[in-house]
Amino acid sequence: VPPSPATPDRPAKPHLPDAQTVTQVTHWTDRLFSFRVSRPASLRFRSGEFVMIGLMGDNGKPLLRAYSIASPAWDEELEFYSIKVPEGPLTSKLQHIKVGDEIIMRPKPVGTLVHDALLPGKRIWFLATGTGLAPFASLMREPETYEKYEQVIMMHTCRTVDELEYGRQLVESLKDDPLIGELVGDKLLYYPTCTREEFHHMGRVTDNLTSGKVFEDLGLPKMNPEEDRAMVCGSLAFNVDVKAILEGFGLEEGANSDPKQFVVEKAFVGEGI
Ligand code: FAD
Ligand code: A2P
Image (cartoon, rainbow, N blue to C red; front, top):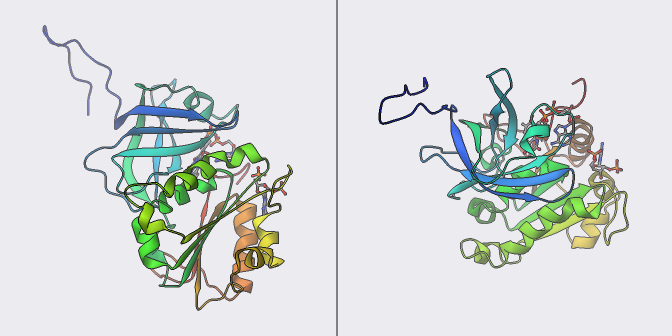
């Protein structure tokens, strides 16, 4: 849409394409923040999908990056959970947004971490590191998650305890959520771990799966292709390692067009990849 021309009673206003207004910003650590924006009335998405969001670059062209929508499909607003990369083209600026500012959001949601990509099962495992929690922040608030599965296990690993806080508060808030609290009940098993700071549960997701510690701690049988389904979101190295472990348990990777036992999505594109 071209900028609207100035008329005597209406001054010209710079027009940001696909603009949405920031309604809330929370800084969790010096590396992590979350924010909420207005939702276009026409936007439909499936919980777990991502969109392209960003800001206008200095060259006058939109600077966009992929972001998982962290809010569920039923929410009136959209929430995002973001890294702050000091020299990052987008996040070096995005981390300074304030309530009332505008961001750009292309309204074309896509992604593999959706319920349609999995065959029915008894339990679903959400396996994440860092901001890889974002799609699960959506799916943990999605009624379909609890309608489809008897148990939902959220494993989230970060280096330090403070990096788990956004997820911890989100899980905590679900119990009293007027919309889905009752549905969640005691179906959601939260298993946060740290790797570089003392915490009540330690270690990488991969190590806790291969050692069997997580199954022991939660009183669950070893993961198996008949009962267990999984969604994976972390760094490329994490995704590769988890995929091999899930395949070792006999699970197969699926896709939107070919539902199977687990699906994987990158939380970010790493250096040189
Ligand atoms: P970039 O130039 O994009 O990245 C610079 C470097 O920072 C990268 O090479 C990488 O090493 C590191 N990096 C980038 N993103 C992350 C991250 N999330 N965690 C740890 N290190 C990172 N980012 C989010 O913060 N939240 C999301 O919900 C999210 N969803 C994504 C979904 C998909 C499908 C993909 C592909 C990426 C997603 N990202 C997400 C990453 C995001 O697209 C950007 O890379 C990120 O916002 C940084 O942008 P930038 O321009 O500042 O730096
Ligand atoms: P660790 O501290 O042992 O490296 P990062 O900040 O590097 O993205 O890591 C986020 C979390 O993911 C850290 O707790 C890190 O553990 C863990 N992690 C990194 N790579 C892997 C991997 N390949 N498999 C399992 N966990 C990983």
